Length: 378
Image (tube, rainbow, N blue to C red):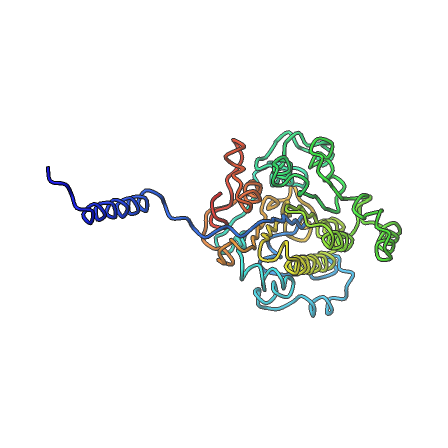
């Protein structure tokens, strides 16, 4: 047999390489853009209705009769009213509508075919927080005084992983978060209620914050105002940079229960301000800049009309309806979602994990999948 020339052999070798490259290109799917998120923050405004988020101040409640307003009505209207619902909501929530809804996504405007709702049968706080943090409703949780949560939250699940151990923290005004996140079992650092303010902060501002905290009359038991939470959290982030955070604000719910709609509007507007300040300050920290996803929501809705807006639960129709926003470097800027399938509170837990590239739903059978189209698949 005639021996092939060296040149011919080289050609054969080159052809084999090219065939291998082409074959590999067909065999392996192309990878999408690299995930940018390294940190995730779940932020809740307790009992903040979807109606205010998407249409602004309720004209039927901006009065002394149904709304119980302490604020003179002309002043209240000057602050929050416009005949245009889009302008009205932007006056109440400038960060939500000026940043989150333009750079991220917002679900829950039922007037535009976007429904977000809870799946638990109770429609109040502890069952809602359990659902959003574990990925499934638990009908056994039927009271805000239920005690330590038997279910493992996504925060506890993440903290058990080496990549996040010691990098998961809980902040909130409601003292019951100690039970919801099962402090004794999870060993998560939980600063809420009486433990919100860092008593070990010996700086001038730290001592001042502690003094104000100790001498301010509370709305509900030992729970502090949202302003204390905002300051305590932002001070903490000056020195500590956890990768996973839960932040629970409570003023919107507390003032609604008291029946003062003007204070609900002020609390909602302040919440938006705290949210915007937290976003800007985290973006100013290299560990968070362009690497952080916010998930923003409520634990339940409320009733409607001159009386039922003050309360929530199965007796107040509509309390099952909520809203959910997502903002971050991996979230397509689809804005206010419309004409989409319903989403649920239970999907929030897997979305927290998905932001970090973790598949919580696959690891925990029975929990809901992550929200669609807001983050790359894990």
